[in-house]
Image (spheres, one colour):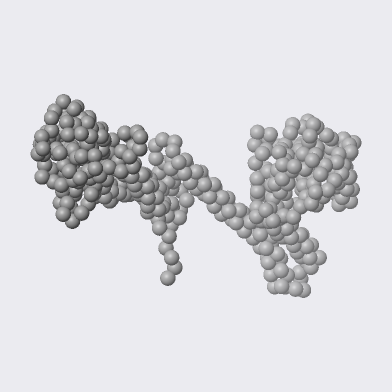
Length: 461
């Protein structure tokens, strides 16, 4: 079975719970440590204060031969023994009958070096179990030098710490559970807009691209995600419409020459003897060339849209390409070609693309010219500027940019007769854009003039 990854909600919940667990554990350890230090410090202060009070009391009192009962000092009990810790002289009431409970060790010249060690034997286990935080100091009494032992009695520090640790251990899982529940529901609320966006996108994919995802208020990451998705849907819808329009136009363009070819062949086949075969052959050649041109342009546009056109980067003399086009126009038509405005113009790019670009513009000018076309080339800053003009009817400059769109003609009927596909100028637009340039109609005294701009170094703008 394939492993299923946890949802982002579950992963974030686990991460936050683990983080909270680490914080609580650190806080609990710190709390126990602080409480322990505070309890030890408080107990030591109480024991030292009781020992000092006992020293003052014994220095002004006479000890009889029997044990003396000493008053309690809070939770501290006192036991006074001889210097050898062999006989009890005085003790607090709770331990008045207890034997010697502790001994002094590690005695140096300084009194502060005295340490009290509880004597834990089977006969004294009941007594010493109530004692903690012992301290010892010397004392001068009427019976001679002795030792004063002080202990915290009854309220064991270990017991207090145990209570705190138990409290932390009980509250720890409860806090983790509470944190997990809060984080889980909090993330659910935070991710709810994302889920709504997902459901809407799923519904859009199942229906059409006209709907849009809801955009929550504010300018956070989810709102930006929704706006980005809507922008993507806008592009997808536009691309879908463009694709449908492209397929429809391409089908229409291909159907026209095919219909003409089939009609010509069927008429000739119905009466072969009376058919005008030269005229039929000319029609078939013309429509065949038209089909070839349409298919070639469609194939080029398809490769361009998929970014599959292989290009090279070499020096290209655009003036030479213009002179070649002028010779081609003179060879296939009776139009005059003016090349007086052509000056040496070299750019970096693919020779095939530049030749196709110029040929398409020249072919467009040939279809509309009455008697002459003019070619020009020059440098302008970092651009090479080409101009191709004709002496035809001209165009309306306010709407002329639409002629660079696909399948748009100035005169559809006339262009179909002369072989135009409605794709030539759109291919020109794609090529100049590849080289950081523009293509548009510019004012002209007579006819129409197309101006092409490409960067000299061949890089996109």
